[in-house]
Length: 255
Image (tube, rainbow, N blue to C red; front, side, top):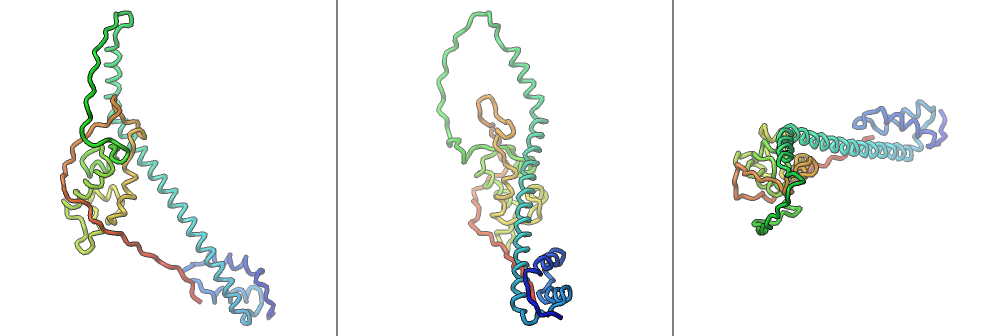
């Protein structure tokens, strides 16, 4: 058996073994023994060096797969959002389609004859707007069918969505008594979050898939504003200030 040590010769074979192996079970020793048998060499004198080479290729593969998984998750997230947006558009089209067509017909019937004399209408005094300014933060948004089923309304600003959602959760005592940051999802919440439990600060990530700007689905009335609806749940309680903890897991390879 030869004792010649040329690590660059072994890289393709190491990569091939790792690509088909279970990374949670494969060991450095198994790969080193496989190299000795395949190449007919004795690597005991270079055990430390070859082990470092194998570990380097192992961690390169782990990082590559993690990056691919991250990219795939981002792709799926974007697909889910596009699907939710399309569903909201279709739902809005089915509900308001006949109404909009009727308004168009009535508007055409009410158009005065161009030949008739023009009547100057007195200018109306603008009424001062009461209540909070409708800026980007408290602007009313269009809610998905699933979120509307929970809150009892189809339009709401982002801060109000959070506030009313917590009112819904507390009214039904859905918080884990041992950990207030964990929410038990009933049937309606499972339709929104797609899971049986959800973290308190994890909810915002899922809510973004169910909240849309009016122009995204072509929803504005003649005055450019959105009609308000009353929410069935009134609560003065605010969201608890709790943090979310995540579990980290480390992958390792044994010798």
